[in-house]
Length: 404
Image 1: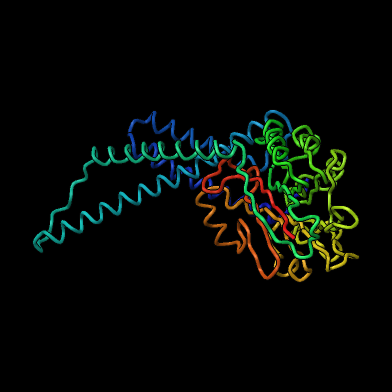
Image 2: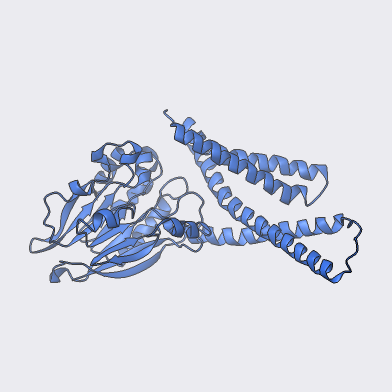
């Protein structure tokens, strides 16, 4: 197994963050709330185990054979990672509010008192412990509520967002043609066949003319996930199902998944285009590989290559581009005359506060964008990656109606 220096540095830095975060949680939830040595020892053991869980998830699945043990480790890790994120936010926020309130109170007292030296204030240990317990209780209650809602939203059926796009060059006979977009499903340890069956049933109920999957379908090898992904064989549409790779396909074996999806009846577009419709009324569906594949060392024929994907096509024809990442829309898709690009990758941030971070980092983070006569739709994703949470960024299935 080959591990890059970049991956090692990432693992070390993230492990440091995890350890420091668990030390902070121990201090606020255990050390500050009681002095009993057994209570504090229990806190040390619990936080050490949880920190070990979060630091080992990255390397254990690579060392152990895929099986029940690794699936359980992955599930526990992702659930705790989501809860720990909100627990840290709650404790930090409430602790900061306590400090601000105390500072304002001391300032008011100082302004009201005569300018004489004040004796050193005695520390009220009982009051301090009471406030620590109250803070911990409120933080745990808030975390339970938000995390429970986020998990419910993540595992329940995605919302359906319907948009209409006027596509330059679309023949009148295809006015009203509908595309169903799935993206970033991330079939893996948490998302399995039951979820996929529900998504397929939901898509079939929309009665679209064509289904497209814009990458990051899987998080794992064909041998382990073929049953869950096999639900795609039950998708029904007049013009079939089409797929382009995302970055997670490369982690999971892009060539193996290309072959597996083809066997399942899914057409994989790797830097090529196909005609959709009848000879006298059709448009071009163009598919490219993931934007960063070449930068990750993959050969050009397995990387984003819009020039190869559009080779030989009439640029005056209507076109829809499937590209996992919204990156390159303005620099490449617009210049190539793509009337519509469907993408994903960002998850819309997936859950608060990361949705704010993604919005700041990505110019096109989620939703419909337009420039001149070209459109871009960035899906928030149909599933989730990592913590099973969806807060302020619900999962979606997109139904796009093309207008002439």
